[in-house]
Image 1 (cartoon, one colour):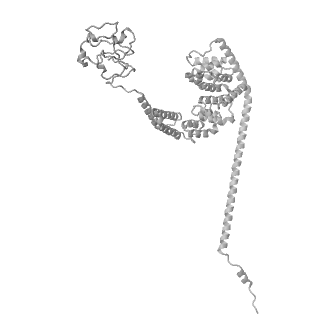
Image 2 (cartoon, one colour; image 1 turned 120 degrees about the vertical axis):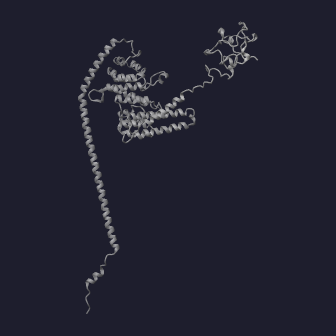
Image 3 (tube, helix red, strand yellow; image 1 turned 90 degrees about the horizontal axis):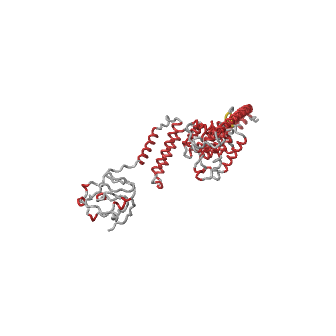
Length: 525
């Protein structure tokens, strides 16, 4: 009888223990799932953070826009409320100016243009300026200003007060500068050589305090629409003339300064021309007023790029001025910029010294280059109080050394006591032994004349000494303090006696005693 098989034996035979490969595959799968889960979690966390940042930024922008809108609405409301007050003030001012102009016209004759004559003091200067402004005489005002460049500081101090007496200051200024801006209308080429951009800039700068709104300030300029349109047309004319002038690189800096100040003074800055303004400012960055003008032109956001461009062009000192104007001293430290500027100037001076084309003036040009750089850096250090970070003592000593060397080179060398010097520059020097002849006079002409006896003169008697007591001189020479060129003791013995009669056959230096110019002849041998 057979035995019945145990089912447990079949189960044990069918189920084998897991192998090592299966464990490794399972572990690898679990690791992959864990890494994938972690990667997905990090990704979703990053997305969540980005969305939160964008939401916060959007919320901040919305708040900023709401604040700006609120401020703009308040400003518009304020402008609307102040229009009547500003107009009333302007009308009262016009009435006052009209009465003052009538009084001035009654006192001053029409023939007195006021352009001539000296001005004793600032009060006299202000009186003359007000006279032109009260009469709206822009042509006479322009002539009066342009001939007084030496009084620029006094004129700038009194200009705004004088322009306030104009019935229409904006129109007065436009008519005054129209002589040279936007196109120079002077007919004579000699007159165009005299640059009058400085006068335009002073007048335009002085206009701003006069036309600002007395209530809300510089945000609104009291310029009539007609004058504003005229100012825009003048600006467009100037821009069109850029191509005729050879582009931005060839335009004179005073013309650029006048154009930019014209835009600011009349409030006609255009956002479409910001890039043009940037190029013009960078090209004329060495002007003292350019940093402030750049901000007034709306270039505040472009200032970092402009500063970097100035540094790349080797204008580190100008870059320092722009840096302080916008408060970027931390981003562009001034001391390294100034040291780099001095280093570049030193390299330029060395290259000038090594240039064979400037061999004659190389030392002078190199010294001027280094002196100019030293003065600019010293002035910048003193202006922005950088003495603690960059002591200027060594720079000042170097500047004094260069100036001392320049003075010593200019000082003429002293002539030795034993050297013979001429009283004038005519003719060559005579030979060294010329003074030992019987005639102590040394001619300044190249060839010695032969003295021929004039028929109108008699011979000298026997008793005439060998040396005349005072020879007759001619030309611009001064008579000698001693009648002898050398002492009588040094004269040879044969000449110590009197001349024979036969040899005394000449007139005093060829007729100079009678006032007739001598005819110099060749020597007869």
